[in-house]
Image (cartoon, rainbow, N blue to C red; front, side, top):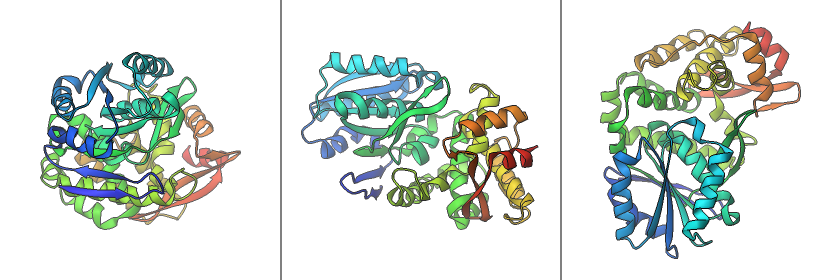
Length: 354
């Protein structure tokens, strides 16, 4: 068992990492929700058959009354229409200000359920139980919750910190290889941006089996790295930008695939390689860095390049939330383990990407 404290003023919470923790969900939730009577559990059609029964059993044994909503798996569920459906069902259940929402699933479930919790009754408590590697190392920590709009991903949202993040590494055994690989893109990102020694650790274990043998260490390290950034910059106005390495160009690749061809992890993987190449071209990143990143990504069957037109790059850069006016901050690597923001005009970036 490992525990990390995210020590935000007035909103501190623990990240609890423990094999078999799903069976202790009720006990752990009761510890942080002493006044709560009802829990509204949101999950999806992939996770429900695997894990929902265990979690609900544990919650009810701890004295919680539960209601469950299973949403269709996939990004399309992260919509205003589904958010409205959650709100209405929460009210039908009788949710009150002292009750809470539980997100049991991957990033889509966490984002949607978290935004519902942030907005229903002007905000109720929220528990994250992430079931994918990507959600465990990234989206469940930090309090960013959102839904997608026609104009782009995550454009309507809030910062709403959970009361607890409960991670059971055993659930990762049920993931298809492709979904596990998606998470590895974010795991590798942490080594690129903050911890060169961790990148080397991963490079020495280039398979799912080797990573799972060390999974508690991997989860703890990634969450610890993200925790330090979130505590310094909760609202994503400064230091937290470092977490976006590979994401600006990754958004272009997601757009190029109409948000259905390429997963988020695949897009970020290709975005990191392209960002490293850009840094090398500008003389800011040591030569060969992109090749090192690409070799590790390939070990997990992640793409290192995705076709993208100039128009798709322009559309993504124009919509990217990290842009400001005619300029944009692109995260580049000063060295392995150290990402730095590089400000340039959007026009200059697009010219370099040709």
